[in-house]
Length: 299
Ligand code: HMG
Ligand code: MG
Image (tube, rainbow, N blue to C red; front, side, top):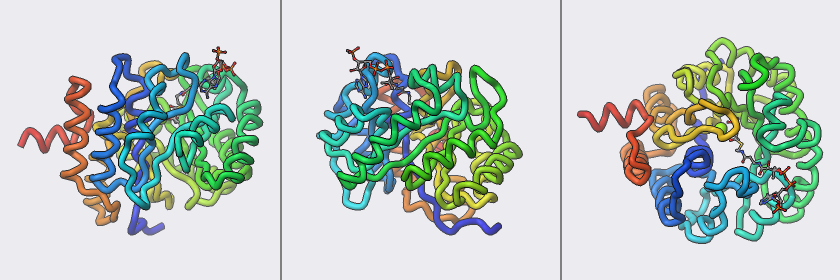
């Protein structure tokens, strides 16, 4: 399979990147991050989550963040919604695209959203109905596609089953998440091979956490499987509060560097992107998780 000429990057830093931060981050700092990402040319930014603040306190101010960001026409500003309550809050905040999130493992589903996989899928049906009614688009996530922190091995067929259900209920795209970053290039190829029998490749995205340092290799493996949408997080920020030890997503800077090297267009300016990364790292008081940003700043 030949490589794509264009890749769409879904920037999840303001959501997946920040959701696990223990220190409070102000609305102003979150807004500055989203605006800096817009300036870098990202076409999709996941801004926040409309989840229970008891479960993920850091995302509590998401409506205020949405109210203050400068929206650039053509850019999608998305948010997570785990249930109808979250969807309604997102709608009230002016959100035009939400993401629902399920898991390929029962134990992770229970820990993350307090219900079984099938209960979660049932919970999404009224979200899909309401979204259609309000002209809101819905993206789907499947977590633990290459391993679960509680159950270990996850069969690709199980990933396919959940992805197929999300696609059938109306998610226009399903992002497959290696939540704990244990996946390898071989396992990634196998997983996409199996899932793409049920969901067309052009409707699938890859979401790789970089815990084992495999994310860039896994993205390359996914490109070879015909996948052309990838989620990533500025400066490699993040982790999942319900997957202990999981590190951030692959850094957006590193993905853009990879794709630039392959001559694949992303519409993103790497230098402006690195400024966004520097800004948020200085807010957090922590070095960047991007290897590219580290190397460039050492020059
Ligand atoms: P629950 O406790 O079973 O829900 O949580 P409940 O319906 O019994 O409600 C409990 C309380 O939460 C009630 O308040 C509700 O009103 C409130 P109380 O009466 O106790 O004061 N509540 C809400 N508040 C605000 N917004 C809402 C909402 N819903 C209920 N939407 C629930 C179930 C799903 C709400 C909870 O488990 C939850 O919020 N989980 C979110 C977990 C999360 O955000 N995890 C991280 C994102 S997923 C991820 O990172 C993976 C991903 O990146 C892909 C990958 O890497 O694999 C996407
Ligand atoms: Mg994630």
